[in-house]
Image (cartoon, rainbow, N blue to C red; front, side, top):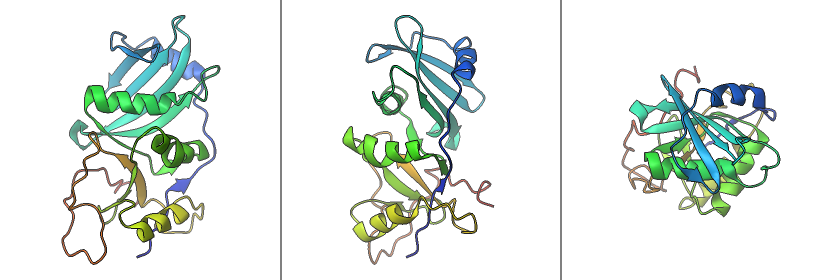
Length: 206
């Protein structure tokens, strides 16, 4: 099996001036993450969560796109701001979305080095179980198939723009981390996976 990559892009900084504009449009009253106020905004298929400290200073921002009739939130932007960098607030927001809104979370097909660290290191260290989703076959790759999983990790962050499969793979977090066994890729598997649970980026991959 050939497994190729998520497209690597350069580090992306979401300007705090943009977040300040969004903050003025949000509503609070959604509770707290650690000691930070959760500020929330939705417009059409876009969802924004901004964390602010007790002085209304912005600590973190995550922007999502609502997919699959609202069942999946695809991460589009994630940024933490000084002096709160290094506190894993992006991962804390993911946990909050899964817990409070009961949404599954999916990565983008374009990721910065910081996003790679989030999905491959930070989230597992915090007890999450990220898995790799194949947008073409709609199989899920996990450590129960170590050869395929490790092969994916080795190749999914290539930067070769000539590779026709550069947009094939994303990371996923199921809302309850209960993935259907029919969708987990196993050796000598005969059954096809259930489809339609995750966004396949079909238009973006054309």
